Length: 364
Image (tube, rainbow, N blue to C red; front, side, top):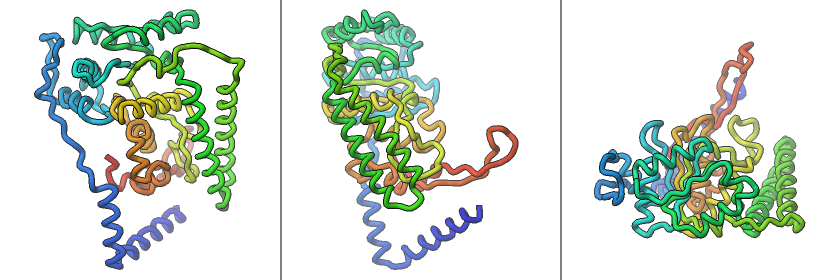
């Protein structure tokens, strides 16, 4: 605690010093305004949308119509409304309108496994005439998976609804996977070199080397010619609009950082998250950053790090453009670590816990 207090005093003294000089202050203000204060988020009004084909028994509320307008006219979208606000109908209506207007050819809805049939019934309740393909557990058994993926690729459906685990079983092409993994290996290698030059970073280097080995093993498995599988790839499905329900299931994505002992920073790469990230990157390429919609009632559940993860999925190009692709740059721009005393999990005493938890400015 004493060390933390001393650190805060040094930070405050530095802030005072840096703003004392008028030239320095103006340079910093100009840089801040150019980078972060130059974009005003657009407000969307969906009151003009007529929703052709929707049952007259159901009328969407104004916030739902505005969310549909955001998906139709904006870039990748996060629907972070609270539970019960109607995110399901928003995504269904947005998918049908985007297909009707020619903004998308094929909509894929990725939902929790146990909700696929409920989603199918909700879809037909809102659009009784829709042509919807709903997957079942049997469809993704080894004997049926190829046939089902072929149906997605060749059929003209208004919507395809599949479960989270089924989505993972539809692979991207090996070339695209290999290119992504090679890029990640390069990033980790650079991070290891930087960390090796600093004192007291042995633990960080060890963790990163472990990650590099796992990535190299994945690349080796991918390049293994003996394991050939001629299943339809994600690119061949023809999907150009992706809706992900309960997107917080994909929050554990590995990131490279020099920060140590910070709660909420994932040190392992969840396979399902890296798979989702690669598919989002592919859709960004073919749609210009307009093809992905995430929906969750809990965008942040444990740590502010989850916001950075969401931005990597949905605003990757924007982060790169602003020089915030690396987590440490993003963390330095938008927040700070906070150490607080909290009750230990065993309930036997207290401990100090450091979290990346406080925002200095809004990252929106």
